[in-house]
Image: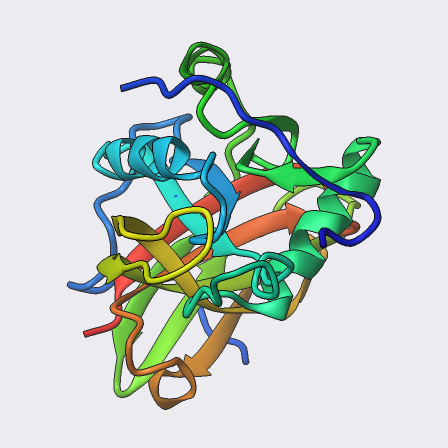
Length: 245
């Protein structure tokens, strides 16, 4: 059954190495001055009957220009009737790191974490919308594709804190018929499914650029989000996304 410290909450359904700064044709449209996309991370599973409403909400949020929505499929549901084909150990580790960083009593599905700061039940639209309306820090980060590489550029910042530069390669949409488990007989649609998550390096406020070869990303991932997150699973202060194809 569920491992220790993992619980599920069900609520009624409510129906996202070094060069100079530059931008390319594949970079996302720049956010207005002082603004940036809000990062919404959903921890979910195809084996969880409470998760489809949260998956649908994530898909809705993914369509907004001011949101980077990311679906992290955890693997601790895989032994309870249905193996989620998108589950990753990295997703479970990231969720448990948030449990520690945010001082939560346990992990649960569906769980949404907004900008690494706040945790909500993934289908709680009212609280999630309220969190999305709050002001947020904005560290500019530019991402573009050139010569078989993804190039991530950050300008100098008068800040002595340490930040992890992270990349989440994701598949924008997929549909799966479910044959067993709590969602048996349903066909589920998942959005912005993370297929690889990794740290590119550490940034300590100096002007820097990170280069990553495109052939190191999974072939099924069409897009990538880059996050600037305070080390130790702290707040996310910068984010951008771009197409990999």
